[in-house]
Amino acid sequence: MGMMSTREIIRMANALGIEIDYSTMRFWQKRGLIPKPVRGPVRYGRGSRGYYDTAVIERLGFIREIQKTYSLGLNTIREELDRIDRRNAESGSADKSKPFRERLEELQQEHEAETKQTILAIVARAMGVAPNDIASVMIRKKDGQTVRFLTE
Image 1: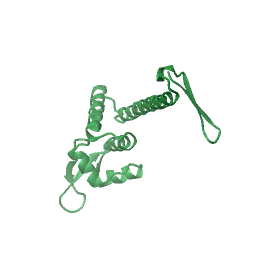
Image 2 (image 1 turned 90 degrees about the vertical axis):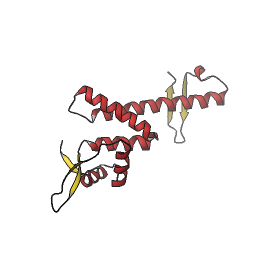
Image 3 (image 1 turned 90 degrees about the horizontal axis):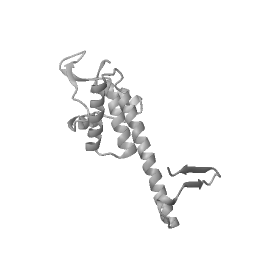
Image 4 (image 1 turned 120 degrees about the horizontal axis):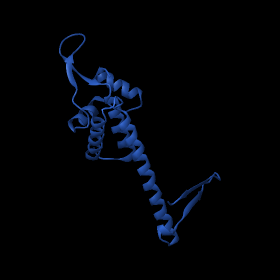
């Protein structure tokens, strides 16, 4: 992948629906969630500018997604990123975005299982039975549709 300036990375991320700005990137960088940019010369004028590998966009999207959807704290996010980084290093795969997608799918499945357990606990309590005694739950929505799930 290529290198892009921080400004270009932010623009591309925003175009992809990842809400990010310069101060957020600096904050995440200071917290160890994203790497420091590589310093390089500007194309015009004097001084230097920060450049990131374009693969950082997957990382930014992952961080933002699990922050919004699962309300995970920065320490937990860093642990998730460390696991993904180890998985990437061990696999040696060219597709560095795959572990991010896989982990998001795993988190979605875990979230759905937790939601299911919460619904079962609420229904069981309302019925005065143990959650293990419920085989299935059917909910009829106002529009007439039904949602049914098995407890197993």
